[in-house]
Image 1: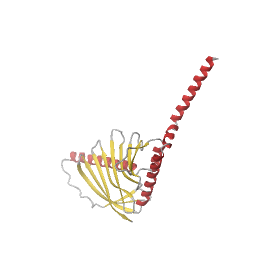
Image 2: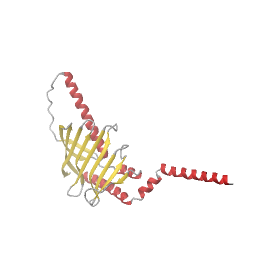
Image 3: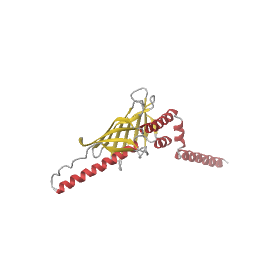
Image 4: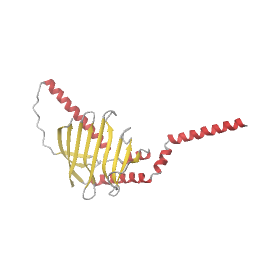
Length: 246
């Protein structure tokens, strides 16, 4: 009789542990923890709403974009574009620069080929950096919701002003990346985004800092964006200005 009771207790305990393990595995407890933080839920909803609203508002604007590319601290190229959002909400750019004059080649043919190859490699890498940055900024509402549902968003320490808060997101776009959003809860507007990510390999780090400003009608926009390709010491600085209704 005693032996049967002990066997039953052990079986019940094992069943309970297995049930708890299943709950943890399926994210049940993660969902409970997320649901118990109403402020976090509110802030995520506000950021999603503000991002969608601003994307719609920016569709009626055009602006000037200045792109400066530097390698190992030395400026290599600067370009100017007229930009507006297309029907797919993606930027459409028109160059404002006159056609570049071809520089006279220097050195022998071998050196010329090496220089041309290096330029092409860095151009391709810079294009990849900009493409990756566009996947992070502005924050995507679906990726935000996914990160929230998975418990990957936390409220960070207070930012500079009383009305500013920080949201820290892990595994937003890639495993082990991080994104910190500084949000003005009074104006309902993003102030800054900082991202630590990487290219194809986690060792090939890419850091991104974005600063936002407001137009007179309240539309929030990216004023400055700096991308650092750490391994290649390649820096891309983008400045947006001269916003006008179209």
